[in-house]
Structures are given as structure tokens and as C-alpha cells.
Length: 242
View: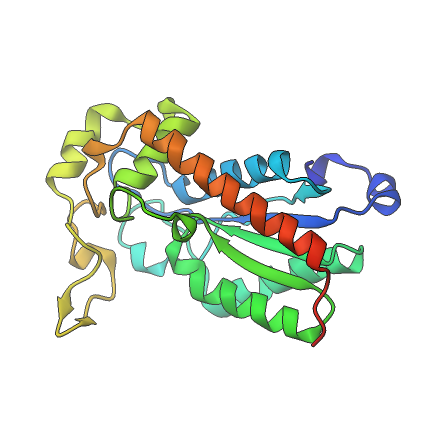
């Protein structure tokens, strides 16, 4: 199931039907959640999808750093430029295609990556050698009980379900007290905020105090089911023509 643990002979003899590439970020998620929140959630969903899918599916090594310059004022946050990110993702995908993996899902955990990943997926699919889709876990949810936020209820709940030790529960009250109620600073339907520190003191958007492990388990289960459907659909549909 893990590409990095297989030998080249095994891949040559039995190429996977679908490749899953977890993509995340290393950026602040408030005082209570780890910098790798987006990556940790994307990885958990990718592995869950690989286990559930009724097709030969492989999880590729993760892409940990994404488009996150908006978090640069918070210590520990890392980022790359959109051009570098798009090129890097594209070249990884084409490496898989070289080895006969023609259906690829970019399993994304970070909102800042969405536009670039969708552009990469469309561009590579239109070239005709592979079918690539971008799957962002929180956008796949049908009716989440809370807005997505940032380091807010959904991400905090997912972390609790993955491993409660990832969440500094003694700092959740602090995180909630200084959080912003929404992403950005909006005037006449326009977000005038460029960086996160201009609208949230501690980097949190939404109320993490309402997060529970049970909620996280439900969110992850739905996301894994949705990813499974996407992977199986790609496997049966095959490579599109340009």
C-alpha cells in the first residue's frame, strides 16, 4: 500500500491502478494544534482510502509543504511559491505515469493549495497520458456541523480522532478566546486581508472548543468514503482522451 516500502520489481510486475499523493502544509494552526495539521489529516484519509478502495491503490510519499505564505508571521510556518509547488506536484505525477500509474488523486488537506492543485490536475489530464483529480477532504463533506475555519472545530476534531496527543487540550480555551469568527476581513463582498495575522491574533478561525473525538471520527469516515468512491471511479473509467 505504501509506495516507499515496495521494491521496484514489485511495482514493475504489479503497477497500482490508482496513486494517492497526500498533500498538506507546515503552518501555524493556533496554540493548540501542530504545524503539520493539514498533512496529518491528508495522510490519514489517504491511507484510509487505500485500505477501503476495491482496486489496487498505492499511497505515495507525502508532499508536506504547500502554498502558505499568508501564515509567514507565525513561527514555524513554511511555504513555497505557487509556481514551485505546481511544478513539483506535476513532476511527481509524471514520474508515476512513467511507471504505468495512470490514475492519480491529489489528497489535499490545505485550503491554500486548492487552486494550484486543480490547475495541475486539469492540465495533466488534458495532456491525455493520465487522469488526475484534486480531492480536498473538507470540501468533500456533505453537511459538516461547523464551518471549516482554521485550527477550528473540524480540524481539531479530526486530530483528536487521529491521535488525541496531537492536540494540546489545555490550550484550547486560549485558542478559542482569541480566534476570529471567519476567514479574512470582508468589505462589500471583498476580502481585503492578505495575511492571517491581520484578522486573527493567534492564527485560529472558528471555535475549537466544540471539537470532539466522535465528531472527528465521523468527519474522517465520510472523507475516506468519498475518497474511496473517487479512486474506484478513476480505476474503472481509465485514462481520458485529450
